[in-house]
Length: 500
Image (tube, rainbow, N blue to C red):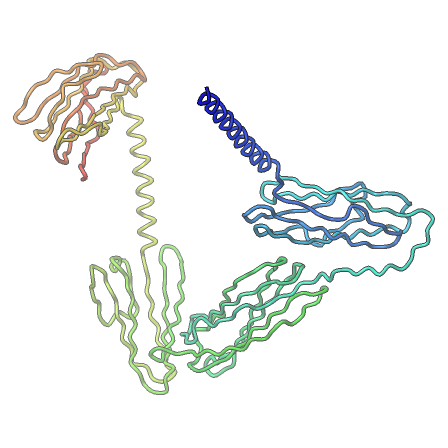
């Protein structure tokens, strides 16, 4: 009897523990389902007088472990009174940000309570709405007193995180590349203007190059820029300097942020400059290469032009000093002996556009001719294949032959003749119509008696083969009778390739 009572007590304890565990799980699920991902906090009541501007601080908090992009807005019958310092926020996990709503009370506003609602929702989905309601109270028949209200200062602040000259030594015709990283650490968006300037000599004359870049940085925004300052082909060799000035807009004025100086050098390889211009005039494309000696003594120069396999479609003035063939490609080489300041021109005419145009015209004419011949066909025959299985070292392939009457009258006594080479093993599985099978030398001949085909009617015949290697199937032949004449048509050929 004592043992029975102990067992019943143990069972009761087990039941109580199970009920308690289920209750804990349900409470956890309920809390997770109804806990807000975003919370808004501000005071419920604010007092103001006509003609005043009050500042409403609004704190937004992200209660989740992932980043959220939040938009906030104000809803009220008196929406024209309110402006927000920032509409868009990026909230890090479990972080909070503060926005400020400025409410300007009109001078003729009547006493009373005015309700405003702050609404926050996720930027991309516009769901998960959260709202907070507060009131602005205008007292009755009271003389407004001077209130000491401190307004948060809203202004942008831009910092230069990094500046780098990517390549210090450049060639004429290249560009000087500068990398610049900026960040807006203020609490308002702004515009940033970058002015890059460089000076160098071209044939002894001073040339200045100026480039302007304007970007917009949102509150907390970051931008990484790559600036390119091109160097003219005529640039003399030497060391040069440049500068980059950064400005940002504050109260509708451009404020100077920082001025950065940099230095670079221009090296002339071979002490010559190559000026290349291309003139496209149908049907000839003309390329003019001008080589200028910038060294202070006589120098021999070499110019190479890789024409690939289209060498015979080009004409040259002057002719190349020598022609080299490397890896199936033709390379033309010109050798010049130029005195100081002397220049020489190479004119290369390409007839490639003419050839391409003629090929395109030929393909159009051929397509139209094939289309015309296709329309003139009485019977059209096509053949296709598909791998359907594998058996030991052989592959099983299904072949379809489609016969269609493209004419306007019925064709009679239609027969399909298919010739299979000796590498093909025929599997005797046929659909709809069984052929006559015969042998001719090492080949297998299949003959289907299709009968008559009415206008627009088509018939599809199929058979299955085994192959152990890649094989080519010849064209299928269709014989038929049309207007008391015996005619025939051929299908396309098939190449079946085995891989792996």
